[in-house]
Image (cartoon, rainbow, N blue to C red; front, side, top):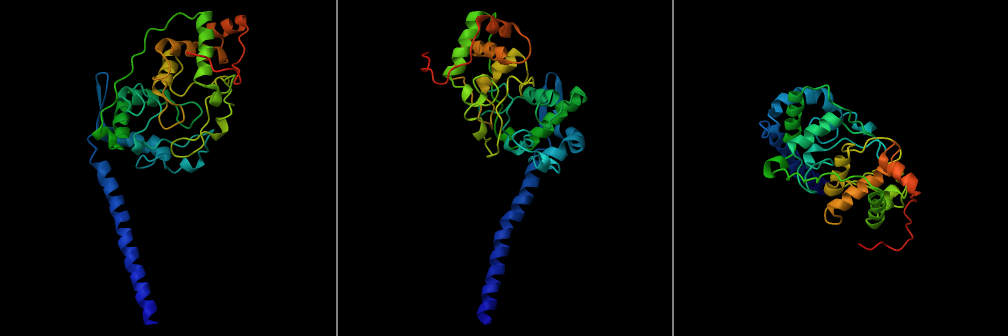
Length: 292
């Protein structure tokens, strides 16, 4: 009996000791967030203040992204990847849509654009009902969730060269780039997100994620201009299987790829008309790898 009491006492002591770091961690987490309440953002000539964005975040964003910006809001449990991705965990400081190189922080303008644009095929709507000042304040509030914005500076935005004229040669060359860097493995040979790797894709947190379907008519995640699509190739979508191709394709080749992808999209375009005139067929995965 005495031995049992001693064992039970030791168990309670161990439980108490091991629970201390957890309590301290929770307190430190709140203190850590509070230490960044003076976070600012700068978009154009507007300065945002984290504290001024708190009320709008609490009312409109907290239900999905959570009180502490960890993506665990009350309604996050109803998000069902891959077709309905989980809310972003702002504490990680990892963002898909950036103008900056892979692995670096986005600029304040990048975060502002994401809030303003929203994301198709997700629970993130367009928040253009906010004033510019309110959006810039929200950017500062989003930044305050991650210590990365204290210890690191945003990357330098990549330079996008002028868009060349669309030609048949460029559309055909884009098809070759699509084959060479094996875009078809995820996006499929016709761009329908049905490639051999599509069903296995996961984000960095191990959750299923869907490749973009170019044929269904929805907007690309990070914007639908040619420049937006070019930028995705060269920055990648951090936190996802979509890498940066900055070291694999040249700027001219990136433009060629933009034009070829336009030919796969549902919307009428000059690129689509050219591909139809050429009778351009989908890439053949079994063909010999094209040489650079």
